[in-house]
Length: 114
Image (cartoon, rainbow, N blue to C red; front, side):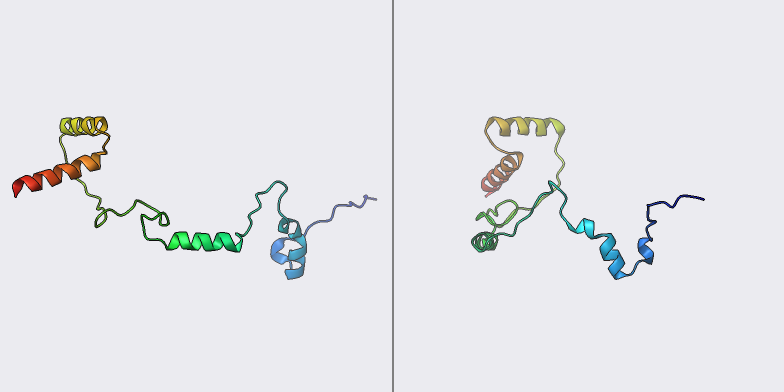
């Protein structure tokens, strides 16, 4: 005579009713040991966050670069490699970015043309 096994064969989740499913998955409702606990921000922090997010761009609240003048536009231009290398070296030596150097060059060229 075969011994009866103490193991209970689980019913597939797809065949369980709501109560059986809730009981079978109850262990997953508890946080895992050592899991990161996220807390809700107290009212004072919520108010501070709301004020920061309401600030105009550039005043510390909005994400991204601060708006200067009318804002910035990304452009694609073609520049000879040697000239670009010289421009990058010049900008680096003078504590400027490539964009700052190009913008300054455009201003000087337009001022000279007038």
